Length: 180
Picture 1 (cartoon, rainbow, N blue to C red):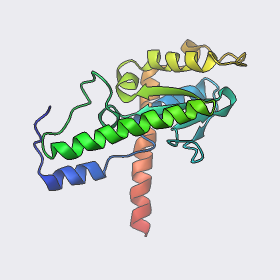
Picture 2: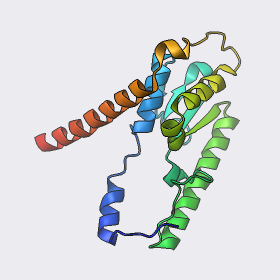
Picture 3: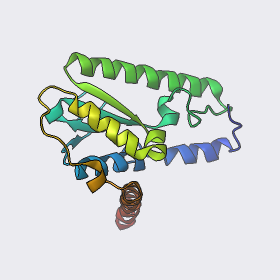
């Protein structure tokens, strides 16, 4: 466990700023899949857990999970704050249970569930994208092959595009709030 060096007010302010959608890891994956020719919809509310990406053609959903919030096993980012330990343990346990329940419901409805961890996208970007594409292509009726990775994807470019989109979104939201 890590020592919590923040006061409760600072911790609360920090946690309030955490984004639950349109995160940088999501943008990395979305940019790569789009460049490879995959089309998807975002956060369909009619599906359990509102998956981050829904590829109806492949009958697959993708969750891009934050290691901290979704408790990536054996990951250095899945730390637990020392203060308010009971709160965090309950919060994390409920998150993991909810994820399992949503994945089970999706499978029962005939959807394939792919989970991508944020640390995978940062540390092994290209390998993670290849794994996702392979899992998508393993399904029935997936004759169409995506474009070759090397011709379309470059790790630095994907990370740069994702960073720009996140910055644009954050600045756009700040500008919208100023107008109100």
